[in-house]
Image (cartoon, rainbow, N blue to C red; front, side, top):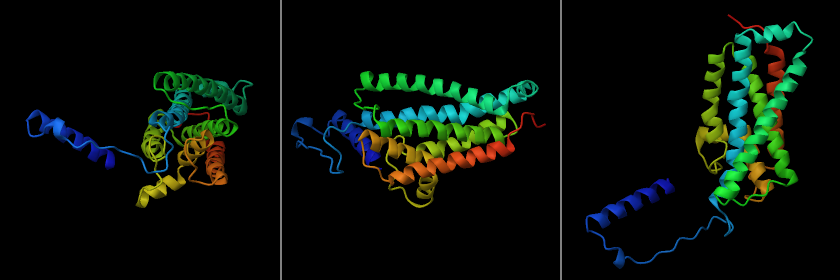
Length: 242
């Protein structure tokens, strides 16, 4: 609301200047200062970069994983794998390595753009930050496997992914703080694994103070991983359901 008010105020000022109702030379100089406890060196680019990296991992897991698996199943490719010595564990291990390579490439591209293109100053070479990047990758990968196990077709899987995408991503603190959201939005924030991963990652990078406890930031995503793996192991099928 504050951002929208500032934008509207700026537009109104430009309109008044153009129609001659406001003389910029007679304005009283003003100065803005943040009182939210942020350091003077804080930049939105530095705050946003970890969120964009997690968003790339999130999209790859939520859409890339079920899309590829369900497409292969609908094309009867998984059925052909089933009659070979390839076991489900090896198939998913190989798929995980492929996703890890993709997310690693995404990380370095986004890091380069943020660091050298937008001036973000973020040091990802910290143990806690690396741990939360890995935790985020594993959580989003598990969610993708969950969707692939529950959905019966490619279209069904993409529908489920689209339903989950907006609330999990935008109410996960990837782009702006979500700690003060009211009502049922607050409930989504509290059960959203993205919230804890983004909060823990930024705390590990020294950008913000973690709103959740360090243990909670780890246990909630691990709970989602365990639930997703359990359901996927029980429901996944090599055969396409018609």
